[in-house]
Image (cartoon, rainbow, N blue to C red; front, side):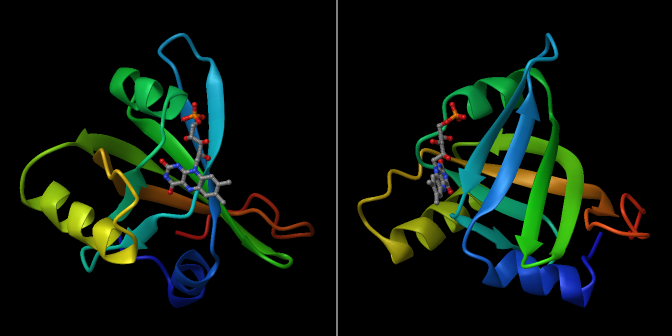
Length: 131
Ligand SMILES: Cc1cc2nc3c(=O)[nH]c(=O)nc-3n(C[C@H](O)[C@H](O)[C@H](O)COP(=O)(O)O)c2cc1C
């Protein structure tokens, strides 16, 4: 899925998003993600620099969600994730991260296939599916 322009704009230009995962037992976790980009094929890439519970959860359960927001505009992005530490897709993500800062470990790349997007605003559109 290719995200709509207004959603892409927030994804790309806001510095940090909130990334939610769930363990096999249903225990939720949420963390900040600033090392993120979106590929031409619409997949979201998040770099694992410091992940702990997030990584454990993805290995147990691929279902993830991301909350993105600018001022009073906000969207929930839902999808499924895979975790890569080698191969072409990982190499691209590793280079992207190291290009920003050599200090970042870039241990792995989380590749998210987006399945749906919901509006997360206050008001009459709250919770509506937008994609
Ligand atoms: C502004 C900000 C941005 C962050 N971006 C990332 C990131 O892109 N990748 C990462 O691995 N950790 C990032 N972190 C650290 C994670 O939020 C979190 O500390 C880490 O995933 C460990 O927590 P966990 O056990 O919930 O996975 C960031 C933290 C902050 C405060």
